[in-house]
Length: 275
Ligand code: ZN
Image 1 (cartoon, rainbow, N blue to C red):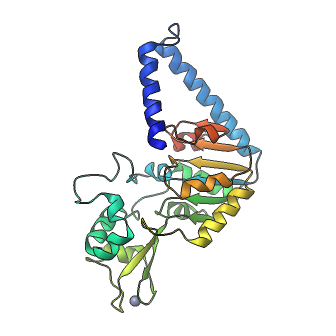
Image 2 (tube, rainbow, N blue to C red):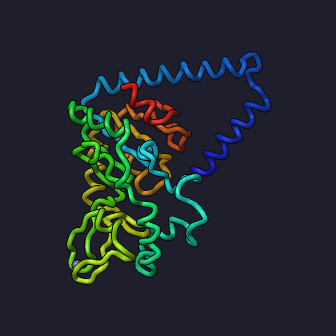
Image 3 (cartoon, rainbow, N blue to C red):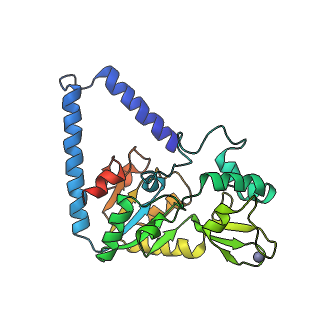
């Protein structure tokens, strides 16, 4: 479905250039028109935020890319020739069990978010929570940057690199311990330490899902940011939203744009900076 949508968008872009539906409008005028529209949309977004005390933010990889963390699903993200297997295979439960050494090589190389800092979007979200306007952050990211920025209510659908447990005795270990370990990180009992990150083939945490659904169901405003909404089951959560102020902020179009009441195709940083 999503791939088709992208194709449609590309075709549409191609068509407008070639067939020039409105030949009297020059390219420069079109650019000005779209900028003005963006300004209006950001103004509308501000009004929605100002008038609500029950906002929920649902974020994806795009929230963290502006902190420098690459999106491993995007073309210019983590995909490269360095590993023999695609990231989705390495980050699967089967691979972790059968090939922990290779898993941790990739994991320590690509998933270490400790050196990154929260950006303007993380910070503005903290301000909204402090003002009592924002009730929860639901995130697909595992980097812990919302908490690092100061957010209190964060539901991490895909877990977090900051929490790690021994698979044998359940003892907790810090992210520093795991990222700085040699080879496979081991507990003092000899067990393998597994990051509390939801791998492919693994289910989401019930507590996190239930609370995310509750927050979305009760939300007056739902802001979805920095996600193309392609990752199931996380993306299906937004269907629980019952309100009429669904704001979608993403640089590119998404397959969910027609569901939203306000779509802003811009970087999250640009939009949140203006709040
Ligand atoms: Zn142990």
